[in-house]
Image (cartoon, rainbow, N blue to C red; front, side, top):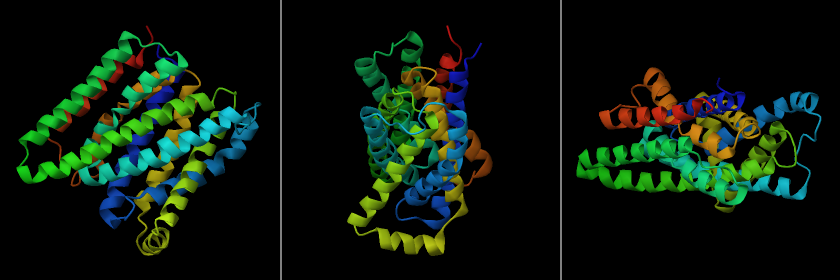
Length: 301
């Protein structure tokens, strides 16, 4: 029987996938200078803030992580994984498309598994190893697709691929920080709220220091796509469900199941926005390979 933790992790992957599809549509509609990061994070924060009363009513332990170490890692997960990781990931999605960008993001479980094994003692089972092999195989398929493209496209892909792989590494580290932040027994709702709050504040501060905040606000006053708001709401669900699943099963398993996102991205995008995502044999095979590999984890031994 599939455990609640695995089901929650798969639900998190679906929510994240929906957010990436909405993000890609919003990027195409309004060409946001920040790839849509600011409205997505802000909307996610507002959604989680609206859910805080429910968290207070349902969780007896402190809603927000109050211990110094736990609070610190919740903040670190927000800065490293949710802000920095997404800033690069959203740029990769804008350059490569939702399917290819998220397939590259599938490398994040590699970093998560290694760090979780080294610092948290999470076991590395044959299921996790096989799933990671599937993710790496999907990356190889995308590389083969790149070689089959005209030369003029390769520089763009190479740039986008480097950005996507960097995003994967940052998000993998952020996943481990999320698990550590839950160690004090704080609710997943509280940890998710701290994570997204810190990420949003870091985003605003970063753009302000770079001198981009004013132009961004003026841009969104005139060109705010509702698809970016939908991406933020779906992202909030993905973050919260990730934290819930991380309390039930090892974070390395959660992160590996998150590699199934490309399958859901492919299905949703090819239904909702087929004009933005032109499937090829390589990208479709890569998405299916990732999905097949992660299904190995869908049942407990």
